[in-house]
Length: 323
Length: 167
Image (cartoon, rainbow over all chains, first blue to last red; front, side, top):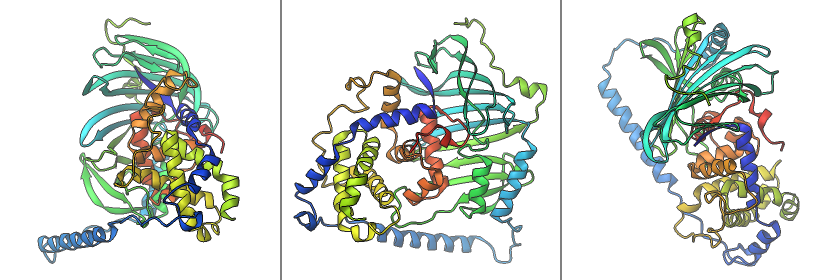
């Protein structure tokens, strides 16, 4: 069964791992008995681990120089200068205004995940209003396709709609109505949500704790305020202008801080913003062939017409009984 | 703060953090011991920092991420004890869904797991995690985004401090 969880579920589950905490006194005793302990603990110092950072830096500089040389040879001299790029801070300011202008729209987002270059999951999400405020009724719908324990093929698994009244700020979860369709043939034994499991080939409607908003709502991981703040602070740089899906866009890339003792390898994060509306169009995180995975999110903003609002309703497949 | 004062006051929190990160007792113990050995050797500098614990926590993460890449490291003797990858071995945990979730967490790439632990266990903001890990907030969000999509965690989409545990 594939279970949909909340951030609270995750926080509580992680906290449960505290049970594996070793006894601090045993840790200290282990230090005193460790044959590799430093002199201060009565032993000798461990030989430093060899780090191959310097050769890598040299190689990186050499390849960058080679790339620059190739670029210089390929780009003809006297070519007209490209249009001047906007500053990152002006893009950030324009983005915040842009989000306000579509606050009542239907936000439609697709998110596709890749692992080692292979597609592993896909989310299609509709959310209205795009920027919900407390007291408003919010509708959202998510179609999830994923792999199963028995198959690496990505198959449509569930279609879930939620309806709830937006709670006061600071609360992300609220009781709401859930409509769940669990598809046959996904390889899953059911579609879990809260305490309910909907069996494949059936649908259900029930009350549960649901989240509010969408991936680019205020406070979300890639919400406009987060993005705009990071862009304005210089964490992102404007790379250039390009066409994406027929739209003129400004491409931004996150700037690597280049710490020497970084624990995480920099994850390439690229963002394309519509050059006319300043709304995000696409966000790509991670390299395609990495075990850490790559996520591709595409954003669309649909006016709240009856046809677009109808997209928020979960269609019940013919022959699927309610359970 | 002396090393001994640090150990007396903060070692409990450090070992709990290492346990959540490692997901097993023996590995957590090895990581903490390794880090403490190195931290002790550099304590004249670490002890002068405003928050020595934050620095030690960063060392713990680094140690966890690099642990099995080292050729000289033996597999910890206690690695076969009950772990989240073996749901049902620990009688204290009887919630099947939590076990299933922890099993999936245990299968995440280590960098993704480290970000989740800092975000949802240590209750750090993305900016603070970026400081700990020496990367940008976007890198943090990139790792978190993929991990949450893999785990099928529905985001609350409000400042996530609202759902984090109190530190």
